[in-house]
Amino acid sequence: MSATEILDELPKLNRAERRAIARRLFELEEEREELEWAAQAADLAFQELDKLEEQSAPPAAR
Image 1 (tube, rainbow, N blue to C red):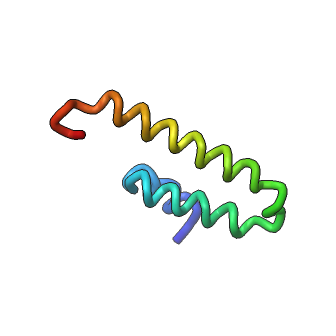
Image 2: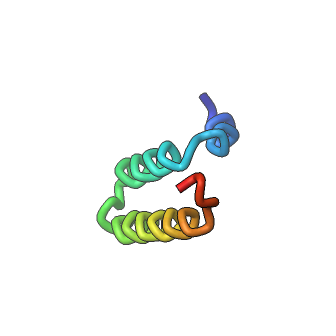
Image 3: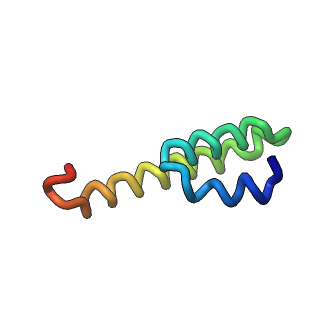
């Protein structure tokens, strides 16, 4: 599978699948220690997005 094909498929994945891919990409990088801050920042951002989506969800969806 080419990089272009992978990138085309990403929007079709759910949030949990995209997060798992992001974490795996960070793990594969040789500069893992240097990128650890980015992984932590991404996790915090994902948590904030979850909170915002939960707050804006209709009552029946909660």
